Length: 208
Image (cartoon, helix red, strand yellow):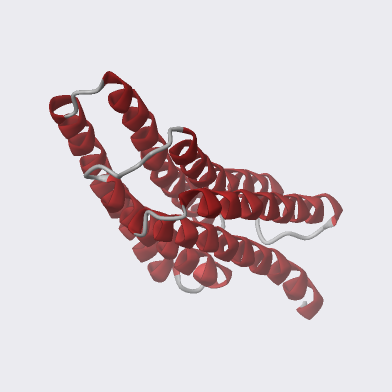
């Protein structure tokens, strides 16, 4: 039984470490938005970390192929890992487009969206840290999931208000197109976090 538990714990540890890597990416992105200097260098660093995260995702999927024992359905683990990868892809893509668009300044809403993403990813880190005890302490997990839902709802409001201001205050059609795309990527990053929380919630419901 101890051997089986150790093999199950491996996947909990892998998911937790992967989430911490994602959190590191989001920290760099958050710093970029709050200190909007050296944007190209920060975007390049995010590109490097995105590749590291890809390797980590492939590592976890490789373990799925070779492991007989998993803590819950391997298909669920696979789906969670693939959705986690979308957070990094979106953050890296947002940073890349900020460089491609030669963005000289941020507009209202961008900082708030970065703050909400950081808070949501931090909540996901706590969720994955608590996941090994999901059969014993569901309350903590559900509190994490409820908070992630709340943050996503808040981001919806910021996203809509940002677009409202953009279309009413911005005179340049080019700037409108640019920021409409950027805000969509920012919002999608937080939506992905909520999708992960819902996946974890479904896993917990199936195994308690």
